[in-house]
Length: 114
Image 1 (tube, rainbow, N blue to C red):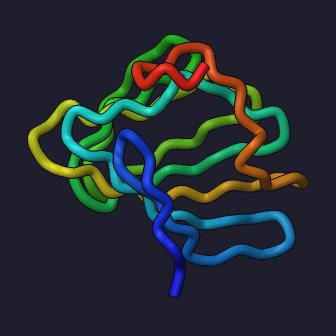
Image 2 (spheres, rainbow, N blue to C red; image 1 turned 120 degrees about the vertical axis):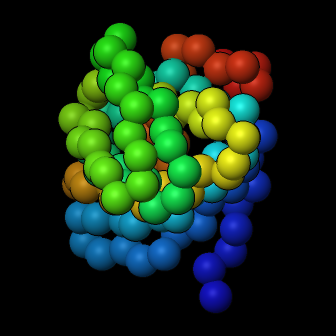
């Protein structure tokens, strides 16, 4: 069984991984906002499984709903926000040569993790 990693915005769990990929289930609680961040070594694909996400990528904001997806290019400054009254579930795929939780540069964070 995969362990759940709690975060101030919700939690995530790693579902599976391989040589150049890693798949997570992310839950963002209502009102939760991940840090504005980017990654040097990976790109990401996000699929909304439940709820609606407000996605920021390089200053542009887009809303995506259940069964919709978005691609986050390597190096793009991005974040997920849940501005609804329900929890948000996202399936996230990392792809890259180095898949590490420490591959993160934060620019803004409401939870003061900068």
